[in-house]
Length: 334
Image (cartoon, rainbow, N blue to C red; front, side):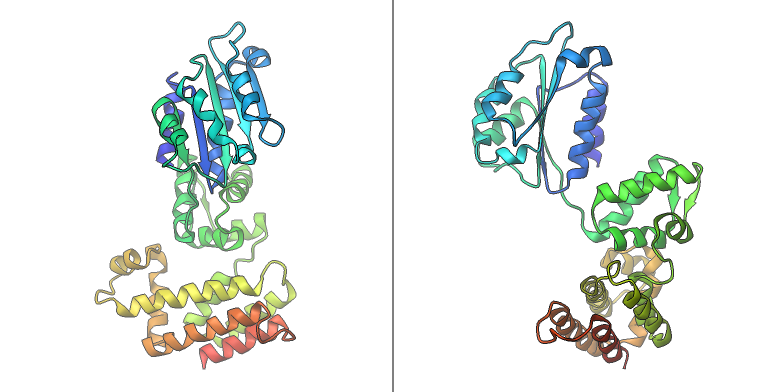
């Protein structure tokens, strides 16, 4: 995120580079940089003759180089954007000759999603010298809530930790999808608002009471009644609550609980740092730690591995998902 801000800040100052090679597994930042260049480098009058969008599936490297070598018309710069450039992965090394001597009046933007250049290759080293190489890395699950908080902070909003966790649980690590939902919330909430679980439920449709986050909490507290209510809700809404996701999240929780038991310092700050969680959630691990001693946690992890296989049809092809979940919870909490 800091690298993105630096790239955008340099462009705002007029300090542009002849090549921007944007690559990596997280398309959100690739799109963000490319869109900023597309919308802001040239004026509306200049774009007609001096901005071109190409698609990797429709062009060759020679086509890209030919367009990049053109001179701008009645403008200081021209912009050539190549979207879906990963479709040119087999021939991308041919770009090296142009990268070694790029047209100074062209800003060539290559959007190379879900792939990255080999650092050992000449093309990588050449672009590093003459342009900007940016790798957009996928965030881990535990990094996304902080990303949500930082994005909202820049727009004068805050978010309740549970609300952020609900978004991650429902949308995963897809930053584009999460950002779209945050945009919707900003349309209905005034700047300065704190986004709460109720806002998430009312505007995005994620239940604040019946979700994997609440199930994890109920299991940690050995609240059998609440856990079964949530499981029954899942059974009525199977598309929004796939069993494999539930099992995976519980597995991660108990794996962290195993780490928790190994800690000598179980203060809030130390636990949050060691488990890489928001301090807001530490009390859940402390409560679960009392209910599940280390030996039991090890047994639960084995049960969850077994349930994971069954949820994928291994050894339980005819067992309904709801029965699988109920069986799993019974074994965990008894």
